[in-house]
Image (cartoon, rainbow, N blue to C red; front, side, top):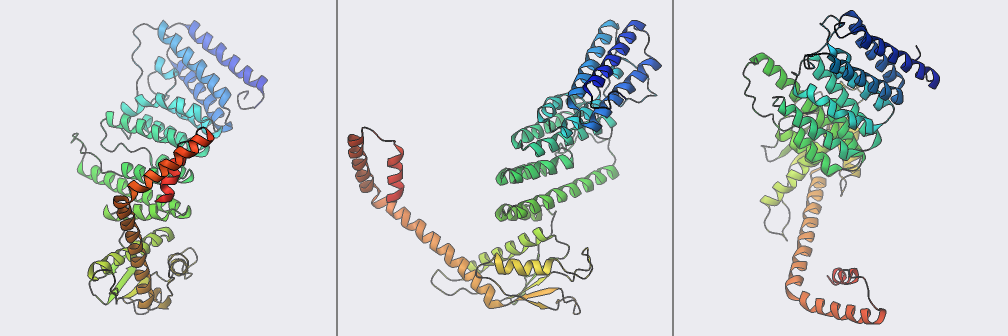
Amino acid sequence: AAASTSSPTLEKQSRSILKRIHTASLAEGVNDLGDYTRELALLHRSLLSICARNGNISLALRITGDIRRFAKTKRNETPQTPPPSTKSRTVTDNCSVADVDMGANEWKLLMITAYKARHWKVCLGTLPFLRPYVEGTKRDEEDYQYAAEAFTYAAKCLEDTGHWAWALRAVDDWMAWDKKGGRGDSRPPLNAVLAICRLLVARGRDKDLVRFVSLIVAPPASNDGSNISESSNETEEEENDDDNRKIYVDCIAALYKAGSYDQSDELYLAAVSKGYLPWSVVDDEQSSSLVLDLHGMTTSIAHSAVRMALRREAQVAEWITPPPGTELHWNKTLTIITGRGINSKQKYQPILRPEVQRMLQEEFYPPMSSTTTISKNEKSNMGALSIPTEDVLAWLTFHRQRTDHVLLEVAGILRGVSSGLGKRMAAVQSRVSANTRETGGEDQNTAANDVNHDK
């Protein structure tokens, strides 16, 4: 009761009572490891639970120190003490000195307290204590689950405080511990991964996010332990695929909301290539039609799907078109199936269709107009958009001209570098020398700026 309050006086009283209990336990003798020790372990856990509920990090740290000092003293006074077990302990198990020390559940409670108090340094300092429970347990054991929950709270704390570099370092440590424990799939818990992904997007680390996702969803290494049944392997693979799909969907959505369209498109292509997300093009064999099916896609994924499909068409049109200077060849009809909104939160109020229309008008230049039409596959389904061929051709032509213009500029720069750069560099150096004599010395950045200007 004293620990559940925020009064400093009562907190001191709670610690004083705990210390008296520890002193009495030590005075009982080394052979008393029965019900009294079990109750003491439950008392430790209850105190840390109260601290976690209130977010009282200062009291939690003091209680943690008291518990560890008491367990150390008890262990030193107990001859031939068995090593601390990494298996889950309950009140019905045989008690030992390890039961009154900090275990995986206790470290998790301390991590929850630090998360609520936004004390990221305590989270980082607590992570190394999770290592034995990750390396020395199986994934279905309670201690491993406690360690995974603790790591998730640490990731959320780092997300709230914005420390993305420490979060990536923590992931590296967890994966190393998991691999040492003999698990092929060493990915951290899903919620921890999603928290770190949101953190990277919030801090503008889009490229780091793409690299992080490619590392996290890499195919698991082959596991030598063949003692796992085939059905359990299939279940783990299905869960792993669902987690990977969730990671891609959430990351694409976060990048889309942040306006990082290039990175969201890159992740979409990676997800399609690995089979976690569908490719939108469903009818491109016939030269007269191009059909994109966005059924079941979120708004952010639909954006990437449409953009990447049209970019691919731009590449195809470039391949079949003669050299620059000739008219671009593209005469397909473009149909985008969005659905009628049957599965939306408000039934029969489509979400994708108006969003795709807005995207075609605001995010594409030249803008593309669209009209609602009947789906080719379902004659009574009005959940489709038809885009005029001339609008698509205008966008493809502009995309091609823009690319050609950039290539011509690059070619001109390269010609200038090979022909007249030596003369311009000599002129720049002479001007810099004159300015240096007049002013008594200038920053060398002036020369670099002049070179860039002359280029």
